[in-house]
Image (cartoon, rainbow, N blue to C red; front, top):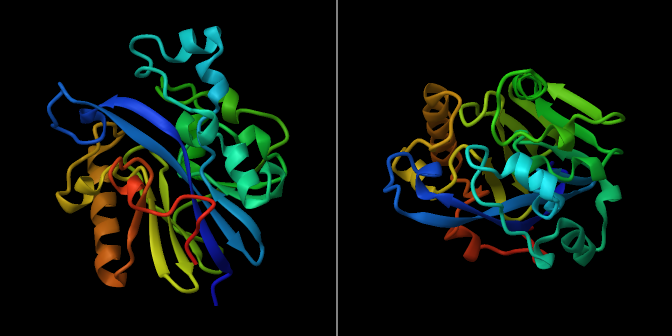
Length: 259
């Protein structure tokens, strides 16, 4: 029986990007605003969070802006308004960062790892390939080490598909980054849902098998898209995406939830 009771979708801000970042081969003239979503699971074993959003401190500190958002490093700084702050959204549900018992990271890009520092008590689940890459000396864009290279964190480094809790399964979906992972979550009424994270930003990535613009391996990226599509077909499970600007306007957002 699944341990999951409810799923909340937190809308944590927006990124301003060329469409080609999400859809390989799109017209480079188009600039789009894409959401940053995280997923909070209320389980009988405690609160579980998929991804930690973006730390808005990076957007107001001049040194951080120069370091991370100068030309060639990222795109224009994302938009995180007070209504998007994770702390406020957690409070609206009646909890805080200190109540998160398990933090699952799809990968360690800065729009997914920003608030790790606020959850030192949590078991932090990450794929081995992602952990090794993030902590390596390789030249990387969109990884902010001060968000995750911190003392006192409880890393749970896994290797491949893994059951996290009853009703929560991590599936290895590399390509966007070397150690990207997604989740299959079993809700008591809705049934299974697929939290794709950044396998594909938009539904078009899956329906038309379009590569993301940003991938460390095109071969792995297309294989992961096809794996998600196969799971959709086998299970009938709906997908919840992290960065789809149309889908986010159609789904329930916290404090509303899925059961």
